[in-house]
Image (cartoon, rainbow, N blue to C red; front, side):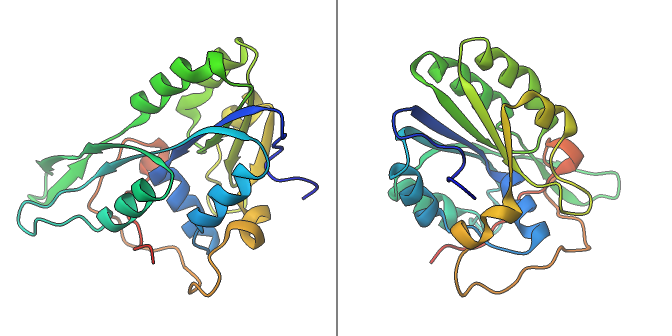
Length: 211
């Protein structure tokens, strides 16, 4: 890549990370993201105002523990703005305990509120529901870069979102830059997660611990 995410030194920039969507996209193409390196690389390439990470968290009342909590805590202490929401518990038709939650609205509201202070937004998501939000911030003169992948099966990046964004960066092209070195290769899981999130194609909320 000639530059990193199309970042420019003089531009006021913000990251908006759709946590569940980004994690599944990276998992489906087989690598873990080095969030420390991602932030450092970004800060050296632009005027970064904020890097926000959005996710729903499953808090299991029986175990009093969320597998996502180590990642959330690490990001919170290491330069990211965390926006979280507790999932709602329900019982499906088979009598199984399930969880449902989404932070899409929070991401869109924050994006619109911050747009007047920005030159460039980098959205880490392939969720087509964000197309109208991207159009709205573009009307304010903000350039939008979308980061996801079309090289997974099925593709994680919505075609409508790719058409709307000013530029698209495939995660595959970032693996050597922000992939965690020494991390074991990941393979897509065949089984369905118990967390039924409201993302496009029912992206699930499963995350790894952060060292």
